[in-house]
Amino acid sequence: MHDMSPHHPRYQSLLLRDKMAKAYQEGILADTALIAHGRGEAFDYILGEKTNLPALNSIKAASAALLLAENPILSVNGNTAVLAAEDMVKLARILPAKVEINLFYRTPQRVMKVEEVLKKAGATEILGKEEDDYFPIKGLEGPRSRAHPEGVHRADVILVPLEDGDRAEALVALGKTVITIDLNPLSRTAQTSSITIVDNVVRAIPLIIEEISKLRGCRIDELEAIVHEFDNQRNIDSSLQLIAQYLEKDGK
Amino acid sequence: MHDMSPHHPRYQSLLLRDKMAKAYQEGILADTALIAHGRGEAFDYILGEKTNLPALNSIKAASAALLLAENPILSVNGNTAVLAAEDMVKLARILPAKVEINLFYRTPQRVMKVEEVLKKAGATEILGKEEDDYFPIKGLEGPRSRAHPEGVHRADVILVPLEDGDRAEALVALGKTVITIDLNPLSRTAQTSSITIVDNVVRAIPLIIEEISKLRGCRIDELEAIVHEFDNQRNIDSSLQLIAQYLEKDGK
Image (cartoon, rainbow over all chains, first blue to last red):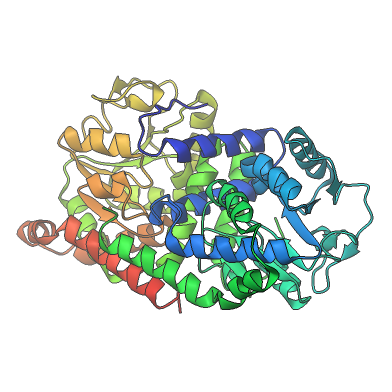
């Protein structure tokens, strides 16, 4: 949209930025979604815009947890839909898992737009549509509290990238295994979730898909060991160390 | 605009976020301005959302440079106008300095909107208006290259908060003393400018105003010594160290 050269050192990041700005203009995103994307850009920048070892650790644990789940749900908001709809739909198909739309600043118009994006990406069964039944998530109020009885409410494991802190806390309080993807290792979502992948959704979700096919042959006790041995807080701390090292080297 | 409690630990940051979203809806800002604000939010967060010692050092050097300037110019873009128009206008009055509108994604509509914001903040003389004369800045192309002959072109010292990297480089190449305010210590603007204030504009500009009244009584050689002794790269490195320490402590 704006003038951009593929030789720009941050071309990929600029492409995503324009994708987000365009989606906002199309009414898919709330205004604060662009600001949230900017926060992500900044953290991705100081992570070196690549998937680091701590992220790979959490991706492995997340993949094992998703394979072990009885009722896995992939919860999709506006930013996730814009950035990674195809990958989320693909992940839902291979697990298999249900896809549910959950918007923080929920409006009927935006729900329909996100539904459209997911359908275009190949989703066949989508929960959380405007006309769907719902129950509030305990501890939340207003439209953001909505969740589908057969989706988030029934789920044992929820992958919810780019989640809000209040909702992440409420889901964990309900006893769910919450897997999030969040570039800010200090965010409440990152700190609260069961498994936190500190990475960009556009890199992390394809890696989860890859990891799931690798782990497919594992026995249940092997998968359980992977989840059991994963220490989320220690892993987040490793991400923080990496950022600190990156900054101390002046980003070189 | 959105539900917010003044008891929220990040209330100030949320207020600014809403101010930006509202300004975007009013047509003052380009779409990528919101994303840029988000990047700033993230860096401010890991700076502890306060003005640190390295920022105070650069604020002192910037204030001395502005007092020594023969033709100081305050260059204002959309984000600066939305976040700090009153402070920029106050600073222009006390120095005195001229105010010039310089937008990166310049459109006649946005120039007029920013002019309106500055006038509402009390600005009497504004350069860079849509109907104004201009020459291109050497090394830049398109609307972003515009600068006023009596403003940026004639200036020896330019305060240009939240500047784009290409423009900061082009201004430094013209031999100008470029003072910037940028929360990302690794950005090209931060790394290129003569004096980089790694702080939030809403905190930094009032502090420049304060510092200028403190330094007002100094002799010219004293002011020159302040500027001469300031080492921008070393000061930026101190900011990076602080962020690294903050992250290593898990933000506690």
